[in-house]
Length: 86
Image (cartoon, rainbow, N blue to C red; front, side, top):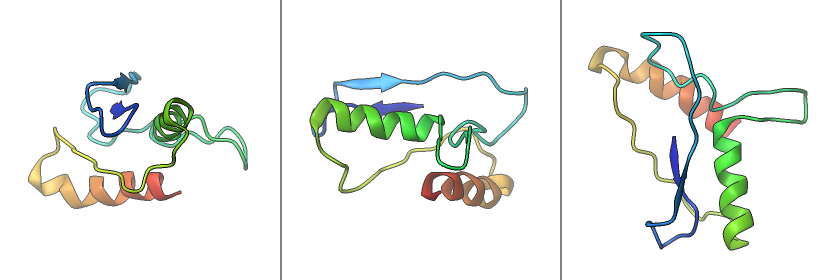
């Protein structure tokens, strides 16, 4: 997952890499609850990094997703979007 660190300077970005099972279409570490109040997922990491580097919360989030077949698009969209909203 790649995310901007300082909007609108898109040349400043961070990358987060995790391993997951082969042939898994969903990114399974966007949300990683370690307790009822703590999350160590990639999405939270990216948001916190953006806030620390710019002292601003994002007004919008743009997501580009690749590597999903057309037949699995809705399933992946629903699962990953739910994790981001949570």
